[in-house]
Amino acid sequence: MQMTEAEILRSWREAKNKKDQVEILADLNCCSKDEIEEIINRKTAEAEKRTEKPEKRTKRAKNVVNEAEIVTNEVGGRLKKRQGLDKYREAVEKELNGRLEEIERRYNEARNDANEAKKHLLIREQQAFILEQVYTELKEAITAIKEV
Image (cartoon, rainbow, N blue to C red):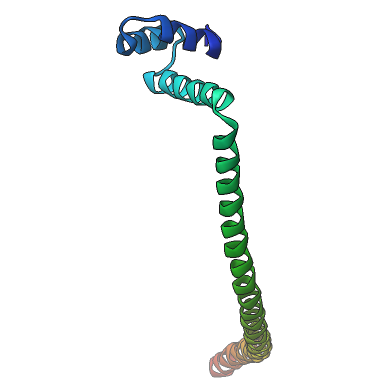
């Protein structure tokens, strides 16, 4: 922004055509009209707060206190619900951990079974290889005997 917020507000207040001035200020400050309007609204509200009567301030302060009490009560209720949710979450987590342990146990059993099967398969492969060698040697011996 090229201008301070106070300069923007002053320029807008002094303008004859406030709507056109918002566009001009937006162009001068390389920003959107919405940003200029937000600055004007905020600065105008701040000025009104400084000039309002003490009775309005105390009334507004009471309203703020009442709203704070309402929010506090809502938050307190949420905390109570949250504690219930925490207990529920703990129970669910415990159940899921139990299921996870069971799945891990079954996985380890299956892996052990697979390893045993691999061992048996290797033994069978070795036996087949040896039988093939014996077969080949016997065939060669028979062929040699027939030639004699």
